[in-house]
Amino acid sequence: LNLTGNVFLKEGVPFIHAHATFSDQENQAFGGHVEDMRVGVTLEVTVHPLNSSLKREYDEETGLWLIAAESRAIFDGFA
Image (cartoon, rainbow, N blue to C red; front, side, top):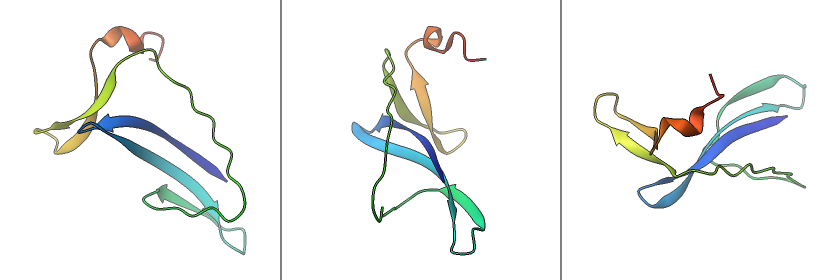
């Protein structure tokens, strides 16, 4: 039903972080993080490139791989 995410470099390798909503044979919706996915027939993907240098860096304080930007200016307009 829906797939949303981003692709950034993580340790120099493209890393996909995706969330999806699916439905079962009874049309009950479920979703979450996508770790592995196989498409049965077709998949349409739209990619919006950014004019910036973003990557994921490990944050010791949180223990998470966070998106790191060289400048906050790229986020102007995204409150």
